[in-house]
Image (cartoon, rainbow, N blue to C red; front, top):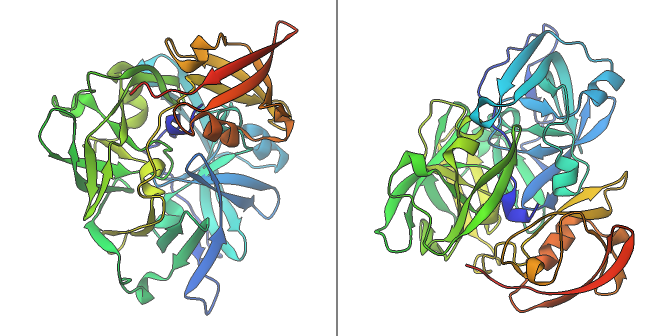
Amino acid sequence: MGKSLIFIFLFSFTIKTFSQNQVLGFSLPEGKKKLVIPFQNYSNLMVVPVKINGQLSLHFILDTGVRNAILTEKTYADLMGLSFSRQYLFTGPGGEKLISALVANNISLSIPPTLTGYGHSILVLEKDYLQLGQTIGYDIQGILGYEIFSRFVVKINYEKQQIILLDPDHFRKPKSYEVLPMTIEDTKPYINIPVKLQGRSEKNLKLMVDTGASHCLLLDPTSDTSLVAPTRNIYGSIGKALGGIIMGKVGRLDYLKTGRSILKTPIASFPDPGSYTDSLRSTDVFRNGTLGGEALSRFHVIFDYSGGKLYLKKNTTLRHPFNHNLSGLTLIAKGYRLNTFEIIEVRKGSAGEEAGLKPGDQVTKINQVSTSANKLPEINQLFNSRPGRKISLEIIRDGVVLQKRIVLKDEL
């Protein structure tokens, strides 16, 4: 999917852990007051290597929207010989899809260079419902959240792709950062910020701060009758959760404010209630929506859960334009190396449809260069670069090689 279309299903239950031999949870190495962890940025999602029980090293998204660690494929649990204490059953959006997960207890988790936590529990999905590899284009096997953010002050530098874990007892407010009050409700962070929709007055909204969402802003129309998509909008798939594709509208707002910083003409998603309520609003905590990675990545961000504060300092990308899928194409990555790219959706009236592209087309070359060495985020970034850009494509359709040219356009 395009980079603004990904968010992760939120779990809202507690798994108890028991260990008699080690201190539960993560802790900094002895004598250390901070630890720097590098991450890979894929579609505004932070991906870090995580080793489970000292065995397999997998890739996890660092996500403020999840309470417990999640392993997305049971195959890896079987390879490590993990045992399970119980089973959970969930329903997807609209209650139409049954989702099964198992719980493994007393797990150790290690993140390079030197962070280790003991006594964790992991929720293991019995099937790969999320298919993060296909959607994001990178091998991702898990999600990790509250276990990190609850233990440390977490500083995120998106430009340097670094996460800095700080000892809360030694943390001091950094200069030049703005401070926003933040509440932690049901293990998730919330802030209130002003947002102005087109043709409406500025409104203060309660938003969950979600590092596991790649979009800029998602607003729930059922939370407030004034949260209506702009007249000029695009309808289609806006995200993916455990139950499947989330449908809704996408449109531009006038602005949103984070302290003195203003994000002008940001893009917001307005999901259909029936396709999204059960997956996103899986708790009793009221919120108007979520603030995601497309907004957060324009700042240096510090989460201080224990102090109830979110610190923000604008970086060099603050004023970069917000674009939404200028090609109108939704691609997935396939194959063992995730370097085969198939179009699964062509938005009606989009640049992709005008170029004659169709679902099922396999993209083999872009601007005369083979796509085999590319990653999906790189392709999505090119397809979302700027209106008017011309891109030549070689595709295979029903075994026939075809040449196409696409001219990117902004439909918002």
